[in-house]
Length: 108
Image (cartoon, rainbow, N blue to C red):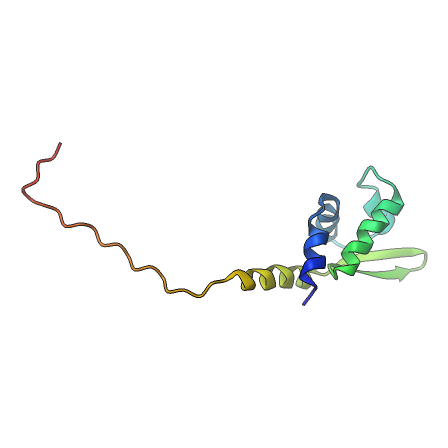
């Protein structure tokens, strides 16, 4: 399971969430990712490094390009793992029974 602290830190930033959304549609190189933002390529590389460190993306080299790939199973494990920690075992509440109706009561 991915480190929850690193994963949630990575997901806390809007730029990194947008990068994940871009990668949802397929692998991209760093330059293609950077084209979607108004920030420097070193800044995008920093964000990609945080996502990689959180195991939310992987990278591979193809010639001079570094290609980034989303790791959806780690995103899923992150959310499911966290939600499982929040679950509380409890008995379901008993259904409420309606109060008996008095047939002699006046209706307004």
